Image (cartoon, rainbow, N blue to C red; front, side):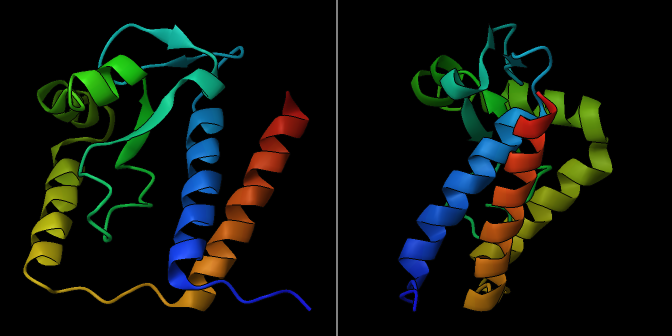
Length: 138
């Protein structure tokens, strides 16, 4: 029988599977383009950069909020938020960016519910399966 993971352990597993999926699903010919600069790198060398920081639970695993980002932009340039905003606006439209920002405001106001553990478990398995399918296509 498998041990039930607690929220912290599930969060780590989900972060890992989600990050792999984001980077692989947005790669082309074995490379990802950084959302905020022209850098092209293999998916394993990119980060899954968050527009709304990942501490905001309402957008942490929202695929619209997370894009491949080079380590330089994501870490050393603090996410290049202005460039990220413009890139998301060009990719999804202003309405989507506004929706993500509203989700952040709702979170900060306490208007959210924690994701249930069974849902997190299901998401981990779903993203693992998606990653496997993407790798099979390569």
